[in-house]
Image (cartoon, rainbow, N blue to C red; front, top):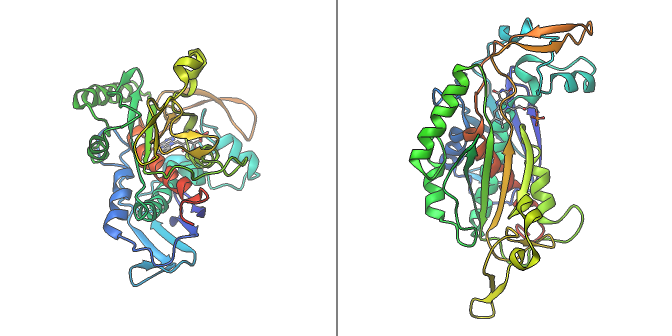
Length: 354
Ligand SMILES: Cc1cc2nc3c(=O)[nH]c(=O)nc-3n(C[C@H](O)[C@H](O)[C@H](O)COP(=O)(O)O)c2cc1C
């Protein structure tokens, strides 16, 4: 599947054109809308007060409830813009955001309001496309589930990467703060509210699991291997600044004898591994164990505290106070986005859809 995102945060609409959707795929709109709701803003005190229902309208590529196989276009109208929040700071580059780079790249013609095309809002159509990808994967017995693994220094219950508790992950995905341990969720909520009261923001790590990837699919090729596909899609998610597979950076302090995933017979000629340090991938190809990766989401760059910056028009030093509506923590909303990116990545891996 290939996609192209369009729209700006304060324009009339945002959307996506998705190509390569299998003909005849049933487009379960309840499922799709539920995925969008998991990402939508304004559901809790912890998130931005911008209220968007994120209702998707399919304007191409569907007929009688099924995908035709022609380009599938999902459109989401923007309904709660407050563009005046941004006029006063038009030329003041927000530290950590894409105002400066997009101003250079688009030669000053960018729609700057609310981050324009770089707004986290553009992840809504990505979630729509991811939901379609999940429906295609479901028919092949593949499921993508993620949760918040850490928020600042707070960590949710670790899962066994050999056999992660799939039901617990499904249940976490239905929560406003998608973690397994409700007490930890409470502490995370307090940490978000504290950061917000201090005009600050927090980040953390999203952990994602892909179940049911058939052993042998993938490729060693440079841009066709499973890790490449995941990396490419995951780094299209704004605010992602790190990615590790399996033990990831933990390998750096291990010895081979501890790091190796020892093979064990699982009957009928099937091989399993006793550990899953490699996160279900060897040589860019699925080995049949759950695919496991973790994604670092940085603290939201738009914070309420006064910050030093530069006026991009004059080149003079300036002070910036951001008045728009922003999430003090985007982790919970990033969980369905990471799942969507992973589902789209899996649909691009050779041998999964075709
Ligand atoms: C679901 C989601 C919501 C986001 N909301 C905000 C926000 O309210 N304020 C903000 O400054 N950044 C937000 N971001 C992150 C910015 O879009 C991102 O930092 C920016 O585009 C620069 O990209 P980079 O951080 O990948 O370099 C959000 C990201 C996601 C995934």
